[in-house]
Image 1: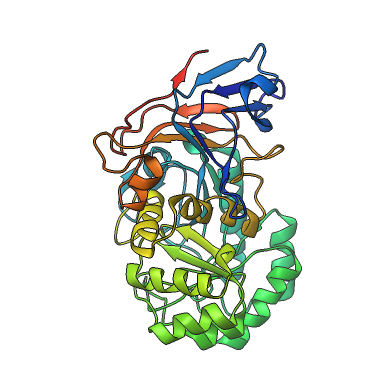
Image 2: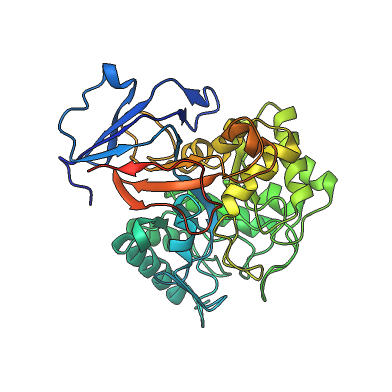
Length: 391
């Protein structure tokens, strides 16, 4: 827990990305946080910056809300048996990710599929990531995969125990739209948010989930609309964007062309606030520590979207859709930031133009709940300028 009295001041910021589509860049050069929450944003001369417990000199680099990965598959701690990899979450922190949202702990060896077992695992998963944050990263987990035979009481039981997410609908035995619709409705009734698998099979036991199932199930998030890994035909993707009205999730471990199609369709519908980003890792494609940054650069460059807008897909859009207290630079939100700059020798007159040309920025520091968690990233290209923790 954050120290309720701890005061952080970040000064000499060159650019503040807000995470909000309506105003993606905000004026100011200083952010003040107290007790792990943003207290004020603006110019240093106008803010109370006296006697900070921690002072960071940004040295002109940009500040963004910490990135949110809307689609991960954790198992336990900072280990994934899917790729036999340790410290994958810490590695993603070095890619600017400060919050992760589970789409199901599906890679757990021997994952229980009986109702008692799956409920027990969901509750345990929620607890162990609530009690242990790898390298400070916030992992929202405990996302059960629904199975045949579940009743309304099961969802009530899980909600009362603290479960707030469903794993990808369709990864278990429930694949028919009518059955999925009933269980999604039960989940929603008790405050549990749902994501549906979209596209072809991904892991053993999963299957094709096409537009008709997605539309009938009416889950809160159209999980990896660009496929995880195999995307639906273009006309089905467009249909889902037009007729569903739910979150449009684009993932790194999917079809990039399909992701661009979905994003462009959202803009044509004037519904860009529905676009959110994930990696869908760990998976057969591995772990992508820079996956969210790569999605931002890809969508900005190939989709011709301003970089500051693409950042909103991975911050404010996700935070608002998921009901999180981070992802936006505004008073009262969690003090989760990344300090970033143009990569050394990268083209572009500034960082935003460089990203718009398809280049990754360099991460110089991550901050979670007002505490610096990492300095210069070991994974991004080195930033031209670096922030400095003065105290």
